[in-house]
Length: 243
Image (cartoon, rainbow, N blue to C red; front, side, top):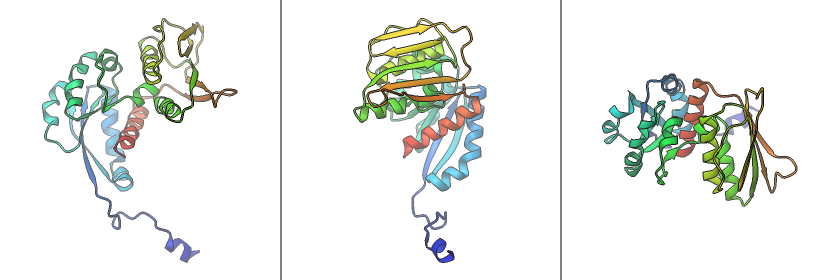
């Protein structure tokens, strides 16, 4: 057994020849989520460096307006919008055109962003609320598994849910009327039905019916995430994009 364990190529930081990539983060917003994100980076910095060979550095934290000019000379700059105001979206087109990725955790800003150019705009954490919703839908499309319907229950209402549904429609290329309220929503390629629930569940559930998941839908379920949980999921999204 000792010989077997000795021959297994366990990771060793001193033996790795993978180059380290430096990534500079500019965290915008004076919100609990912004502070939670900075704390999560500090907590996971060492592990990310060892396992992903990515050095995350928070260069600045504050109002997004004050961070824009600072992002230009930095290596691999990524702007993290943790604010709660929609007017920060006015910077998105300029940042994206310069090749600067934006991790958007600001629902108000995403709702007000109307430009077509979205290359480098990371929204999966925000829309899924910590669940792999958009990535699952993209995978279905990529593998030719047609999505027939999605049932959404609980976990918020109003503008938040309207934003989620609009991004589902965008990813799938559907044409559906706007969301008008309701605790249980079933969305399909050309229809949206909502049913009022007097006591909707706290957890949000997505039941996705596809050609392959016809008899029994794929179910994604989880609580409305805390700022801390959302921050950690957001870091995972960043690392996935960075490869």
